[in-house]
Length: 280
Image (cartoon, rainbow, N blue to C red):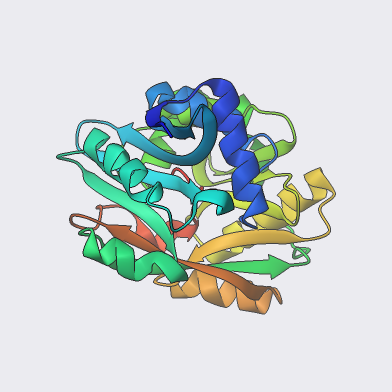
């Protein structure tokens, strides 16, 4: 049997998203289209006699950072030595960078053996969305109507590197809504909701205050007519956790944000929901 690992195609990235859905990770219906344009060479597929059986994504951000996701071995090859070579190929692509990932509970010990350490936990809260109006003086506008340089600068406060290619696609794809909160002409919040196989996912959810974050979720849910929402909330932001609990959302899934290097220098106080468990 021949096992080969190589860069996947755009179709392969769609396949990876389907595999993730089969694992119960509930990716967005159109997320893969934004993933591919971010770093087209980052999506690796392992093929056994030509049949795709493993995958991993290893996206480069800037010159110093990277993010690992989509580490999946199909059930037919689990325990047969196909996953580790795929992992090694992915890590080789990110050599010399501070690599982040969101690790499911069952794999965190293995990630620690590979040089990762826990930074915080992301807890997915799910349930009916809140029904909240924006605070006085705050308006919600379509993110696509905001000058892109201003939106990218706000996003950069909450992410270790600039990610313009990803961001432009993320706000523009079908089956989603992207909103910016504006006060006195300044951006004070930004969030995207996308349709998923199960609850509609919110990510990112960035805001200068918890009441702005809540209003963004409520506004997006109205846009999408979403009966249930899911937000991956970093547990180090106590205001974000309190907001989810106040809204009646319940924990349903947990990962650990892990890094090989230091925690990135970002605005953790405004990080109410991470963008994606696959690309950071």
